[in-house]
Length: 552
Image (cartoon, rainbow, N blue to C red; front, side, top):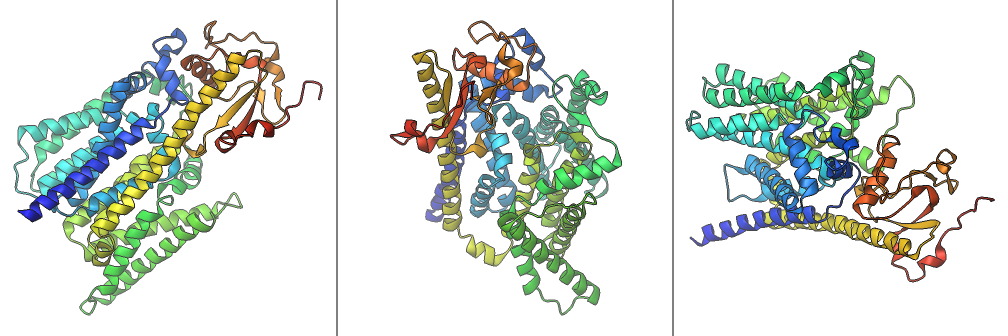
């Protein structure tokens, strides 16, 4: 009884840390860039097209709520992030609830996600639901599938079928790439149930397929996708690309650098785990061909591990010719690495783990390939890929004795908590600096007749996706207002916002000024930037750089 009590306490501690991390991440948010469009979309007629700009109906509705209403933001943001971590934990440790290393390791990998993808998803309110909700739906469906097929339960239970139908429909109305991926996933599980699982779980998989098909049809019937196909996107710079050479160039230049390379910690777990299993395996009864293939696969793991370590820590390989040989070699390395991982998992791990890891790696690969034909591509597009890679890495790590000993529960807990604390400190300082930034600008405005505004930069700029404090009419290099805008009459936030003309930067600036109640005419002032460290120095004002006058 004492052991059970201790186990429950440790489990509750894990959930508490998940919750604290989710709440802390939510509370360190501040409005940036597109967030202002979503905030004012029902207030200005010129922004009406952003009320439902595409077929992401579910995520669009929730994004309006999360941007405009603080209570909805806390509930939705915290709930989705907590569900993501909990589902990942359940997927890797569902057979043994007393082993919490999987949960701590999932948290550690998640927090150490590539910083650009992390910031563009978790610190863009207007992107958060769009990218996180479909991943939650897919993880929940995979959990339903794996737990059923590894047990003797009857999948015809109404709750399972209804849950699969809802997950398929909701997940398909959030993000186009995840919608297409969900279609492939649904078809795969239906066929697998028919031909490999003796029709077990067939109704559950059919329900998910029907929900996904319904959501896909609703999404792509939106007229916005027809305008994109005709190269007349009304909402942005999105496009389809079907030229083979251009698709190959996108694969080399835009996809492969973000597909697997930025997550060295996950690859470290995979390489160490599988190489250890290879070294300790009894190969005396193996055929010569199996020995040869296993040796080649293990060597490929070490080669890729060394490449990742060099490329992410020392320096990044650069392309020097249009032949793109460097990109081609990197792509081949990733492909051979994935094949090697699957082969070694096939040799050393149970078939149920082979099935799951193949699902994760195939999911990461398939989701990335969609971006060969659509654009533009940003770091946040690869958020689902990293989640799948993390799941595969933790599955392998938890099956390796030395890694299990190295990742002792206390060590895993400490590492995850330190990573979470460090991340929350950095983003918390950014939010604090952003608040100081606004108050400092407001104080300058109160002085009146200010020609040069001092703007405080946030300390961790990699998490600043666009706070919109840049003057769209000011050239930082020459310290002069742009001639094209000097004589224009520009309405301030008090006079109303004219959104029918102007660049995206201009719109960001005007909405930002309106949101923070700043009476600013951007055509009449210059800006200088200084660091948050300088602001906290007593004599920061004496170090203000010289701003040339009009006659200089």
